[in-house]
Amino acid sequence: MTTRLAEERSLPLRERKKLRTRRALAEAALRLFTENGFDKTTLEEVAEEAEVSKSTFFRFFPAKEAAAVEAETELWTAYLAAVADRRLSGAILGELHHTLASAIAGLDPGWDQRFIDTRLLIIAAPDLLKYVEHYRHGVKRQVIDHLAGKLRLDPEDLRLHLVVELTITAFTVSGRHWVHSGGRGGRAALLEGFDEAIRAIPASLDLSAGPVRPTSHPAAPAASAASAANQ
Picture 1: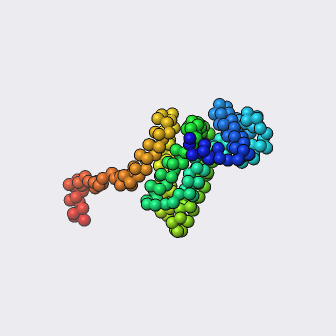
Picture 2: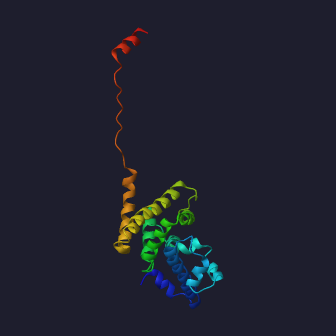
């Protein structure tokens, strides 16, 4: 049983019902957006597909975009909770890497396909990419604040911003490859690719094109050289 499923089963009945409604809305939204297009699908159609009212939709999601990228929200919500709970020990890049990997591993089994479908939808609907980028910016800011508190550093310390950015960029790059492969190899392959991307960071910083050779200039014609000598 995944960590997320175990947590859900421990919730009171009322909260479990809310969670089921939220998921029904998100699944209906992703299905309709994928089949009919994000811009062409209305909130009324999503609510009807999930058998709830439009007002119920807005109790769970502030906008169409939020429902469309619920798989992203699941991932980063789990990551933020894990960062808040983690006792840091050792290199912070490694700590963030293991924390995000653990959060991914703890998501429910159906998340893989939802994430793939969501990323493909984002490719087809550029406005969703702007929404996700804005959302991830908020996630990064929260992770930085958590780290600043745990490490007793200024939240504007450039090192915090870079290490948080590097971790999420490593996942984004590896996740992109995994999605483009159709999720081949399942979640194990996604996590392996993430590990590989993290390991590649030091080598990428040392990447060099080698020494640049000076450009040689052709010799001046003899007549010109003689003329210059006489000036």
